[in-house]
Image (cartoon, rainbow, N blue to C red):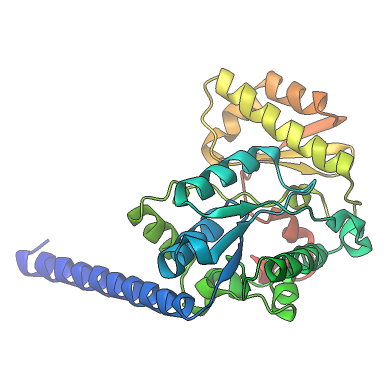
Length: 300
C-alpha cells in the first residue's frame, strides 16, 4: 500500500475510534445524569452483564445507601447464578434481597407460547414493585439495553414498561458492546460474562413449562460442562434445548465437532432425563427457539 494511502487509512481508523470513544463517554455521562436525579432505586439484578453494570452505575451515582439489588429466586433461575450474584453485591457494598417469584403459577407462562416472557416479566415487576415500596425506594429499573429495544420480539420489555419500570441503559443509548466495554474499564468481573437467559428459554414453544423440565435442563447443562471439562473441551456457551423427550445441545461452533464425537456428553444428557440427544451442527445461537416462530427473520 502506498505510504500516503496507508496514512489515510490509519487516520480514518483513528477518527472512527475517537468518535466511538466520545460516543461512549457521552452515553455514560447521560446515564449518570439520569440516575443521579433519582431519589433511590431498586435494580432488578439477574447477575448478567447488563444488570450488573446498571447496579454499579447506580451505586456510583447514588451511593450504596440509596440503591438495593433484587435477584428474583424461582425455578427458572439456575442455581449456579445465585451465589455469584450475592458476591457481586457484597463487593459493591450494596444490599441484596432475593424475593421469590412464582411465574410458574401464571397460566400464560406455563403454556409457553411466544409471549411467555411477557408473563415472566409481569410476575417479576409485580413482585419487585411492592418490595421497592416496602424498602422506601422510589423506582425500579431493569438492565434493558439499547440493543434490546430494537431486537424485534421482546414481549418482556412491554410488560416491564406497562408497570413503570425504568430502563436507564436503553434511555442513555448504551448498547451491549458499550456496556461490556464500560464494565471492563470499571473492573467489573461481569464484563465478558456469557449471556445467561432463564432456564425456561430452553423449552420449545408449546411445551408446558414445569419445575421438572426446568430442573432437567439445568442438570443436563451442568453435566455437559462437567464432561467437557474432563475431556479438555473448552466451552463458553452451552444450551440444552428441551424439545419434549428429545434434547438438542448447542455449544460454541469451535467445539461442535468434539462434542458431537463425545459419547460421554450424549450419555450425560440422557442421564439427566432425556430419551434422545442431538448436537446442533450450527452451534450456539442466542434465542434460537425464536427461529420456529412465524416471521422468525424479524426476531433475529
